[in-house]
Image (cartoon, rainbow, N blue to C red; front, top):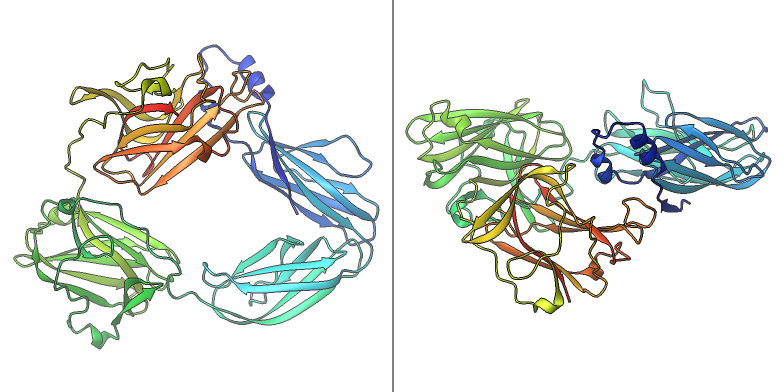
Length: 535
């Protein structure tokens, strides 16, 4: 079992700054998270000596402090990628692993070390096919007096075992499905081991286990849908016209995944879709579809077919075992001379020919919203109950910057219908700071912001309290991030969020940072107005 906690220190950041010029900028460190996924691979020598090899690991770590949990009180510091050995007497110990990041932020994990010179007993093994990854098998094992286990997966040509710590998962992906003999060897500090074998059937996932991503909300004039539950499809569409593809061994069906219908093209040589009537897609910018394959189709060629001048193709590679989102510019077809004012058919060709199956969903043409941004709604909360950061309706507090130097976005201060508005384009993330005069929101109950975008699919809001010392990473910082999935596009979205939803923001007397994050990453434009706290 592992227990985690975060501690915060500034010493490494101070050392870095002390050794650099005043002109050097370290604002990017403000966005560095504490280390995560701290653990250790533990191998116990099988010679009755109690010698343990410890390999700590983690994300965002530069070094580790290791406390062995026995009579050795002082920790040992090692760098990421290094290993350390330690001799234990028989017993059970709590190994304490502290991962240290570049800024001095720390994350701690406690992992149990069992040292026994008895052979492992009561070995229990669970072998299962992975539910999401085709031909992957996961093995877990528990046993008394054991610290680790080796799994021999039994595939010809690969005799090397996969090792794991007791209680963790050993995984392996086979080249082919079939029946294999899997052997598990539990190991402790004794020379003797304990084994378990099982004949196991490895299965291949031949169909998606999750639906394709939900398309964004779009205005009716911005999309022409052929097959998608998110939009209104063109009427009279035939998804399997008889073009002779049946003679190639190809067929089709409507596949139902927990109520979500999608097209299944089997042994794809070529398949077509016949529209009920020709459609003019000249005002659209992209053709989109989501495609899933188990791996037996490596690429799909898509052709738009015009009534007046034939067809033009465009090919896309596919990723096995997951949905591949395909967005083809309409210009990829018009640049080949295709007329797109009278598209009446689609054609799909699989590679390799007639050897694999694809599942297709969300087939549509689309363009960016042509809607014009209007002024944001006027707030109605009484001024006496508001701490405003940005709003014409109130008197704003001091905000040091609406775009920190470590931000990844472009900021423009614009006016919309006479109303001052913040415009963030190419938005990945943007930091807004009130460090010179942190906001005391202890008496406030809500955070409010109005946002408008015609292309975001997700929007995140993070609030950071620097604590009583007013210093970033001074040891008492707290923060929390809220995610808004699939926000409405082409209209103002008023986000009025209870501060109680920011569960990690356990103090609110020194709020010094507000961070907005947009998706698609670095490719969305968001307008912002009416940013304030209220009760």
